[in-house]
Image (cartoon, rainbow, N blue to C red):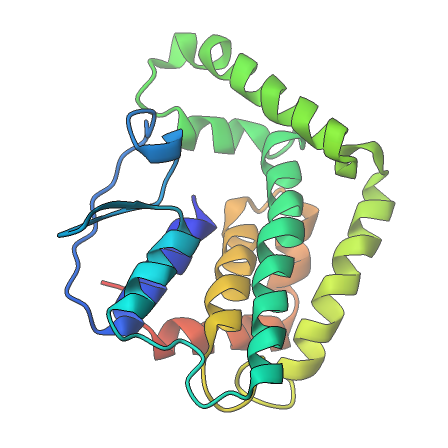
Length: 217
């Protein structure tokens, strides 16, 4: 469910560090009350950016061989994924009435079904209010799809010409962009965005390359 957790798992696997996955549905006791969190000899490392910093401190280099300018570009890709693709993912999961029942039943699976809607409704409302405040929820479906297409177009253009966003080698750009697209793709067949990605052979091939290059246990 979490592209940030997928991103962190990809980084861990690519770093060569030994690691073990541990799942939880209620992260309220975790730092920042969210996932991912990495348990290390140095303590708990919160947030995918914090995990990246820690791994790089252990010697990992997710942008090895890139110029200073290219490293700036990968950082821009990371932010596009997390702060724009991420908003579209929240919108499709929490604001699309056709998708919401599937998302609710996954996230709130431990809650008994008769109480699930009642317990999940305040959380959904909080996220919907946040999307209204940010502004994405104020657009029409057509306007949102246009904005998303503006992101997908350069991703598709680059990955139709080369294996990864920055060339022949996977970088931090792919480790962020791919998890968000994968999460969009796999959220629900009822979603217009999921269908858009399923029908795109170039983007599906790109996502397959990422997951085949860094297979997760």
